[in-house]
Figure 1 (cartoon, rainbow, N blue to C red):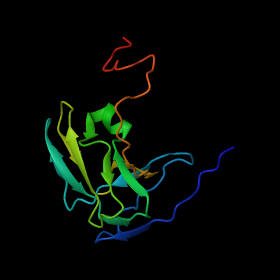
Figure 2: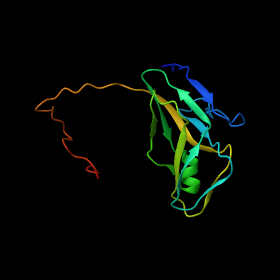
Figure 3: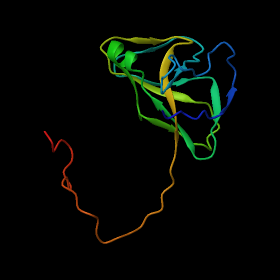
Figure 4: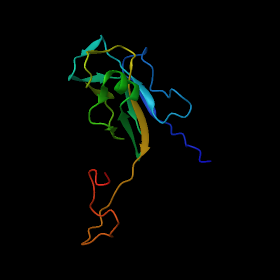
Length: 150
């Protein structure tokens, strides 16, 4: 059995003591739910997008990123998703974490203070050095993409 290593990450509340910190909703969840720190209710009409504050900033360890992803329940129930998904929080960013949501649903969607609006997943990042070459190894797939398997 492979055990997951816990990583300590510094988090700062920017102003909203009543807003929950990102948290896992089940024991084996990969993502932590992230909560809205709006001052007043925000209504998104169908097609609207809005940058929603979370009231937190993070200090990620060297070699890590945080990915912001949609919540499947919001997507299926209301057509709410995240633009630029997954969004990346780089290790050197120290500003407020904000979530860019869009209403792809057919009805207005109201974001209330404390609502769970996204998920945050922490990942290790590999840095790349390019090895420029004139040829690549061949595969059965080759350059087939964009639905080539049917």
